[in-house]
Each structure stands twice: as structure tokens, then as C-alpha cells.
Image (cartoon, rainbow, N blue to C red):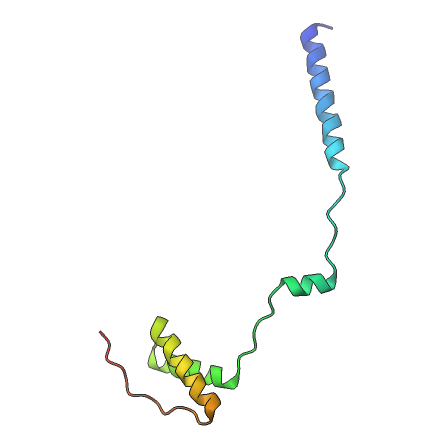
Length: 93
């Protein structure tokens, strides 16, 4: 065998040895069920007031800051007692 072929054999053998060394590393610990539930956010349940105000905002075609402001006022009013009366249509710019 020539020197070049010996070096090639040693290089290939070292690649195989390195591959098995990496293959034998320990797997990361699995999360328990309690830890898994706290990591993920549970979807919020929306109140009836919130859903009704969203429907009203949809009917008016509100988006963005206008929608957020309307829903905020609507929910405050709804939780205070009565549902808000439909406000007159705002002038669009």
C-alpha cells in the first residue's frame, strides 16, 4: 500500500468512528405532561359581551384602531349593565 492509500483508509475509518461516537449521545429528557401544558398557551374563552361587540364591529366594517376602540368601549358598557346602543356611523376620511 502506498502512503496516499493508507491516509485515505485512516481518514475513512476515522469518519466511521466519529459517526458512531455522535450516534451514542444521550437523547434530551422528555417533558412531563405538566410541563408541556404550561409551555403552551391555552386559547382564551371569549365572553358573550366580547363576541357581541365583535359582531357589531364586523357589521360596521371597523378595522384597526377604530375597531379596537369601539370594542373596548362596547365591552366596558356591556359589563356595566346594558348593551350599548348602535352608534351613528363615523365619517370616514
